[in-house]
Image (cartoon, rainbow, N blue to C red; front, side):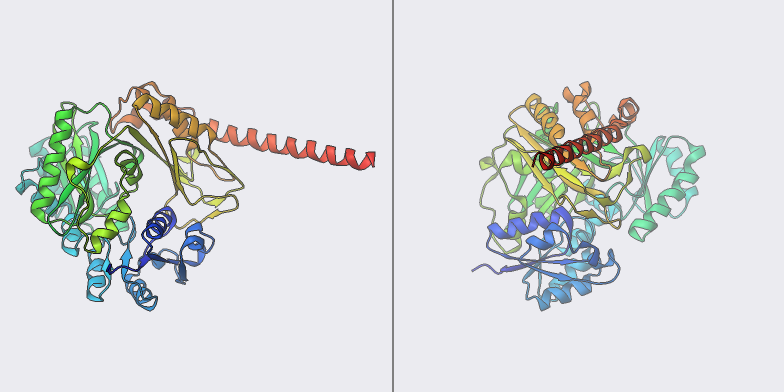
Length: 483
């Protein structure tokens, strides 16, 4: 008999909704918590049970002691952390275990190991995974870092030792700018991770960002679910994700799979995880980091593999063995994910909370939409600006791009600025259509995109609505006159 009957979802937004849906298909009761500004969230309405946590809207999803107390009162067997917030907090995982609650994810030890970017890099190096030259310990001063950078040569990248998500990172091209950027990286690291430790690596100019999806159970079975290309980024934040990586040599792909699964087997890793690599123009690859959680971009992997990653995470946490061998996993076609953010391109993509006044979603064959958006929903100012993910699938790359172009044209959100116009520009770009991109894509392309169209489109739609309302009013009055 399965141990997990009821799951507390320690998160919000589209990932909370995603977990609710996975629980429903597994006949598991879903329980969510919510801050007072999230009371109208669609995931709150769809969960089997929902409980408020009053006070600071951010602390509601970060205070793990309160969350565990609530989980126990609600008689939950397990907690799923989603992504962000507490998803990679080893103390939270350990506290769940201590209180007899199953943490749906890897062990606290593995979360701690991969949360420490230096320790994880050293561990992977010992397992034979290629890594970039860099410091083996946190740096104590800018002067120490500058001496090391002079030795290995510029450019270098300064990274938060306990960070992730592109925060606490600065690229240094010459010694004269090192001290300033070092201090900026430290300051951002403190802001986001409450730690000021940073380290240095040799910086690869415009590599590709390729990641491998891993699933592992507690019986020593480890499989990969293919790869993803996450190279299209802005300020180290992913914007578009693709599975599998187009234009990657089969020999490189096979080697990435081999070293990734071998490393996770040797470490005894359990649950879902993503190993991220940088791949240079000659297709040499280097370990970057490991994410010990479900990824934002997991849907593209689900589509090409036919696998429900969230359900598999729950089953593994419940003690089940993987139900398939590596050779039984078949990959088909291409999937592309576009992160839909409430942000204003005219204001340097600043987040723009507000109320959605009109909403029309795309659909049709090969289109999936993971979103919390609906007409009348007010996006709060306290959280990440992502309101959903548009995912498309086709049997070949050209078909996937055409599918994306059609779906993005169908998608309409009014009342707030979004990055839909940016995505529409991307899918029309010749390099994207030819699958030629790396992490420098936006450096080369952003200035060529017409992002003013976003405001213009909204103005035209508002004008059309006013005209339609006027025509309706005239017709109404005309009918009254005729009577």
